[in-house]
View 1 (cartoon, one colour):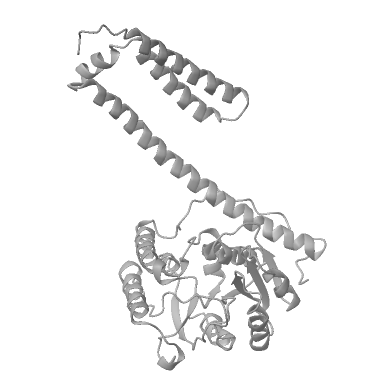
View 2: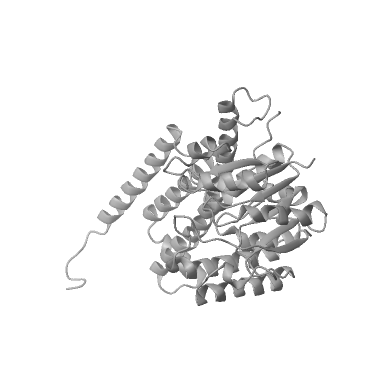
Length: 128
Length: 250
């Protein structure tokens, strides 16, 4: 069966290019609506660009793998996904930790303010 | 006259609180009482105010560490000289408040920890399972190893602090299961810690926040967190500084 039926491999390339463009458009739209902070927008735009690059120039993957001494091209994909993906997850953990700490401090602040407001005026902390 | 703030962290303790507050008023009539309601589902804050205490209701649930720290921040901001931490469930005997404050008044210590096991407390004052005692012994060893202090009842939350301690903890206090980690933190910041024998009571309603299933997680988490705290530069604490909200002008 292999090689006997000619397969139009360019078809999957069109699909890949279309998906990359779609991803890029989606990210740009998110930026336009202010749903994404610039630092993340840049990260995801870069990802979309890389995807587009590899779907346009298909043999780039094998060229790069050969340059790095990786015998099997697709394992480079794995590396490219896992490496930055892992870093991104660590980064998000850091951001979440900072956010929850800030959240905690705000909650403490709100509780103290609310008590002063309830107590009356807030010029003198008094027992209610 | 030194100003004392009794901080009572409470989660769903509307039933036990009136008794706790009455006990504190009876034994420490000069102290102000601040209940920190950690976003309870019952009327904890209301019960506290009805019993004559001040109450802060947290807008979201922070856990015991965040609730206690709210008390430190309040005390720091309002210029209290001493803070006494008393649990809202009634297991801490308010009769012990005076003996907790005594070494602080005499400036023999910066922190006093009410201990079930320190000399004079008496075994009969507290019943415990073998696993629990083993855990408590582990924490004692941990404190000795990481901070060079001997605290026989490291998980006790019945404590008194002076201004130096409050100033440190107001900035940084561990989030959950904070007791052991706080000891390491305080000892490494150079604070003097003493234990004062007290007789704890049985819980008045409610359940311990530590179930047997969580015990293992508790041990591992506390050990790791304490070890990490011990590697930090002296005087700094857990958590990060920059998120800090600026003090409001009075």
